[in-house]
Length: 364
Ligand SMILES: *[C@@H]1O[C@H](CO)[C@@H](O)[C@H](O)[C@H]1NC(C)=O
Ligand SMILES: *[C@@H]1O[C@H](CO)[C@@H](O)[C@H](O)[C@H]1NC(C)=O
Ligand SMILES: *[C@@H]1O[C@H](CO)[C@@H](O)[C@H](O)[C@H]1NC(C)=O
Ligand SMILES: *[C@@H]1O[C@H](CO)[C@@H](O)[C@H](O)[C@H]1NC(C)=O
Image (cartoon, rainbow, N blue to C red; front, side):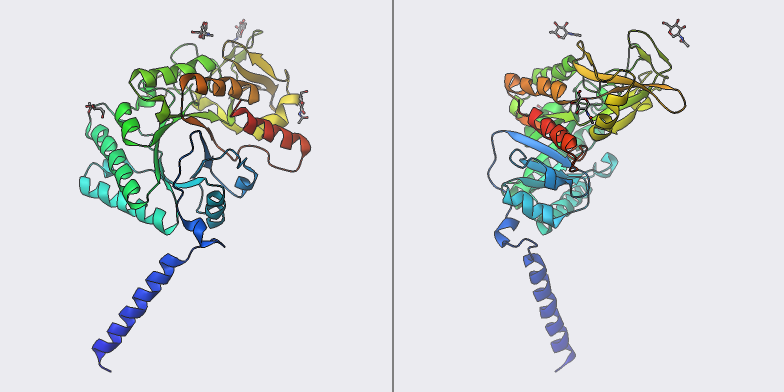
């Protein structure tokens, strides 16, 4: 056999190897590697950030899990067995996708990754500041358009979504063409939290997602002629722990100044804490759970080991259910949370009941 024969043979082996690789489905039932095709009317969108907590999600509700953790083939098989989509995370510096060729390469890479991992789409989490009518402004719209087209073409039934701040009005200098992003994607995930990232008035601690501010955000999106069915409400399963410079008798917690994207004060002086940590702390705090009826959110005060006073603002089943009840009124596509792994999923019966109540609050 000549040299040509050997290389021909090794070429054949390579080809066979590649075919076997593509065909290797990690699920016990190969049918579970098929992408999800049907779309349910109400979306319950979960960000999965780590570990095996997903085993404790309420799968009677979940429709999509966005992967913000390493790929987990077991989760892919499981989600598919429940008819839920499992989607990639997509983030890219916008100056890298102004060039159409570079943009196309990025999209091809993501589509191929989704195919080899049997995934059902992508969540674009691009939270970068953009100036109106800049090259980045147009490139972002093109990115969403071309990503959606490529995914829909290459993976039938797949879903392409885009994460937006709680309001389209220049929040954190994200001047995007929101109506185009809504039109060109399957839907927008509205991050109705971190609503104090830019504090323009009194520099005091406030709710992460106050009721009125949250609802107004949706009205602003709808004023741009965005179809409410293109909006999924994101709620926080975390709160903010602030150190108070001064705490008045009526619970005004003054904050240190911290400019953020043009505003004098920001929630950046606070520390994000998971709902599970809050639940361990609230009953033993100085005040216990208090309710602010203007913001329709719970909070409490506590003193740390150094004697500093803190104020913690968070969301719980009561504040979430109030917002979730608005989904029907506004005709939104569904609900979701940042993130699914912030609850205490241990065997402790109180924790179990608290986790259950948080899931239940999503669909009041
Ligand atoms: C924004 O998107 C809309 C809808 O696709 C389009 O009609 C409009 O021209 C875009 N605006 C700019 C400034 O490109
Ligand atoms: C804290 O608030 C009290 C009551 O409003 C006020 O008298 C006091 O001057 C404040 N202290 C500081 C350090 O701002
Ligand atoms: C805290 O108090 C509430 C209300 O009294 C109670 O339902 C909850 O079980 C308590 N949490 C813990 C961790 O003990
Ligand atoms: C919230 O909005 C309602 C309806 O617009 C208004 O009546 C109420 O005063 C607002 N509450 C606060 C605290 O801004």
